[in-house]
Amino acid sequence: MLILSVFLMQRSIVNALHEDLKPDTPNVFLIDMSTDELPGIRAELKKEPGVIGALEAIPIVSARIGSIEGTPADQLRGKDYPKHLLQTATLSWADAAPAETKVVDGKWWTGEGGSDLAVIDFVAKRLKLKVGSRMTFIAGEKEIPVKVAVIYKVLGENAFARSSYILPRALLADQPTVWYGDIHAHPSAIPEIERALFATYPTVTVINIADILTTISDVVDQITMVIRFLAGFSILSGLIILASSIASTRFRRMREVVVLKTLGATRNRIATVFSVEFVVLGLLAGAVGTLFANVLSRILLHRMDVVFLRDVRGSLTAVLGTAALAVVTGWIASFRILGQKPLEVLREE
Image (cartoon, rainbow, N blue to C red; front, side, top):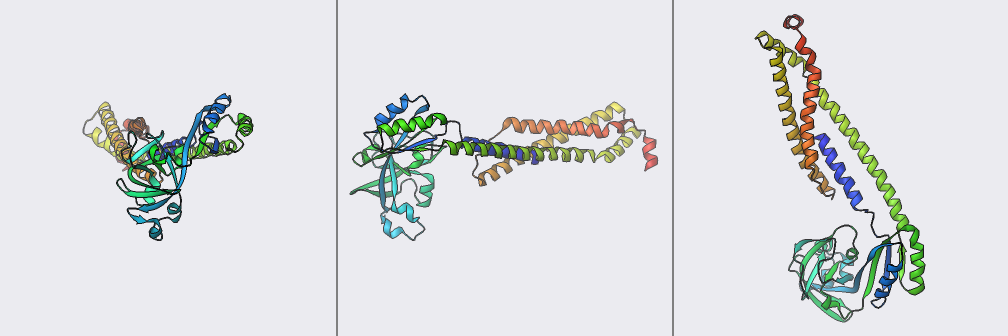
């Protein structure tokens, strides 16, 4: 259980670290793009050889919350509602569920969507929103009544993590819009991309975080190495303890051999009995340990907000490996016992 728990946890944690920092993670951000500038910026980025993939852009409309469930936002302050979430709200629109998002509750709209609203999960929790909740936004001088239809979460790096609320396009079509975008580019090509964009679109802000991501990647690799080292050390210690626990029963089996030989059992018969015993004990210990290791790892990783990775191959290997280890260590400790004569053991007793 200890060995497999350590293995499953280190595998899930290492996977989570690398999932959060994929090779195609955006390393250049573009902000303050207007709707008129967006097509030209897309075309300009397609010309740059250092850009990998296409520009991912999201429209942002600034607003504030007017009311929640009919209660004005001013009256909600001081009632366990975060003040900053009531003051400002970043709205966006989408015709369908954005990529790399997961619906936690509800169903995404199709078509125009009416007055439906999608809320990111952590904001919904803080504002006590659920599917069916009604609220209003105030964008400029326009009041926008909506009903929560979807609660979603963003998976990995996605531009829609910039917005807390997603509405149908028709509700925000007449509002001033600022676009935010991100791309992934070769670090060496980013200065040239910055110069090209500044020459044509001087009001667009380009933020280069490639060096930061490189530093983070190096740190993640070092953390991964430490985690694997500690896991390997724990696994090695567990193997030694497991082997010693089987070897510690040597004297009990010595007495069993004496009794069986006295009753007329042959050496081959005793070897068969011992082999069956080692296999059954190993399979039973492996199965029970594997079951509890998966349960324990799932609970601990859930508390750490890390996704548990089910590993059928690793669990099966743990069961069979425990059985094989039980047989090998058992016979290492018991092989010489079969050759001892009953009379020698009885005299020592």
